[in-house]
Image: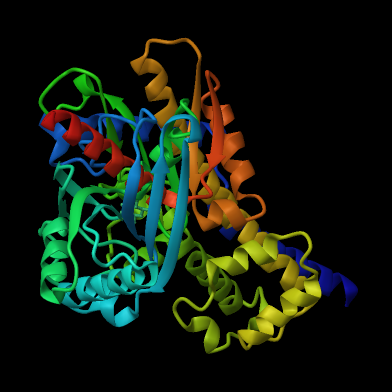
Length: 463
Ligand code: BGC
C-alpha cells in the first residue's frame, strides 16, 4: 500500500517536472535568444529591413539629454498601465539645481480603454482639467510633455503616429492617428484651458532621461511592469530611417514584439501560446507576453489548470473562479514567492480562488510561480545583454560601464526578479559592467525634462 502511494506520488512529480522542463533554459539557449535579439535590432535599424522587422527600433527625435541649465514649470502626462498620472514638474538650474514634482493619479476606466478614441482623450483632458484646478494653474499655458507608452512612429518630437495599441487598450479611431493631434483636439473640445504640447515620449525614454539627469552613465531605459520594453542611445549612423550621421538618438526598441515573426517559437511553451491566443492582440507582443506583469499570472494559471486536469494538483478539482481570465494576478506571484509568506497564508489565497488545497499543493504552486518568473527574468536579461553589448561595440570598446534606468512593479516588488535579471546580464554580457538604477520618479519626470530641453533649444533659436 505504502509503496503504491509512493509510486503514484513519484510518478506525479515526474509528470510535473516534465511539463515544467519547458521553462528551464540553459545558458546556450539564452545566448541564442540574445543573438536573435541582436539580429532583430539590426533589422529594425536598417532601411532595407525596417518595414518587415518585428522589433521596430523606433527613432524618437530625442537627441540631446538635459545639460542641467533647463528651468521652468512643466506639465507632464503619463499614460501607461490602467492609471494615468498628471504631474507638475518645477525645474531649477544653477546652484540650487533641483526638480520638484506634484502629481495626481487617475484611473482609466475600462470603458475609456475600450471605447472610442474621443472618449479616451476626453477622459484624459478631464483629468488634466481637474489637476490644473487643484494646482490653481488653469490660466497658465504650460509646456507639456506626454509619456505615451505604446508603439508609435515618431515623425517629430511633437508628432507621433500610434502604430498599434498594446496591454489591454483598444480605443477605436486612434491607430494610424497622431496622438498629439488627438490630445490637442480634445483640449480644444473642452475649451477650458490651453497647453503648449512640446514633446511626446515613450516611457523607456522618459525613464532613461529621468535617471540620466542625475547619472551621466545612464543610457538605457527598461520597463518591466504591466508591459515590457527597452530604449537606449544609438549612434545616428546606425539609425538609417533618419537622415544624418552626427551624434546619437534615443531609440524606442519596442522589443515586446520580439518573436512576432516566429523567431522565438522554439522557446515558447504551450502555455505561452494559449495566453497569446486568448489575448486582445493574438500573435502580437510575444516576448512581452512571456515577461510582463500583464501576462505572467495568466501563464501560471494555465499551468495550474493543466496540472489539476491531470490530477496533479488540488486533488484534481478545478474551481470555476480559477477558470476566470485574469483571476490569478501577477501580484500573487510576488506574494507567493516571498519567503515571509507562510504556506498557511498561501492556502488562504487558494481559498479565495475557491480551491481546496493541501500543504503539498502550496509547495507545487510556489514551484510553478518560481519557474515561470525565473524564465521571464532570464529572457528579459538576455534581451538586455544584447543591448549593452551593442552599445559597447558601437564604441569599439573591449569593456564598458553602462547604467540602466528601470521602472516597473514586477522589477520592484517581486522578490527574485531583479536578481535574476542582473545575474543573467552578467553571464551573457561579461564585458559590460551593468548597474541597474531604479527610478523612483517614474517616466513623467523624464518627459518634463525632455520638454525642458526642447524649450531651451527653441528659446536659444529665437535669440
Ligand atoms: C508598449 C511599449 C511600452 C511598454 C512598457 C508595451 O506594451 O508597447 O511602448 O514601453 O509596454 O510600458
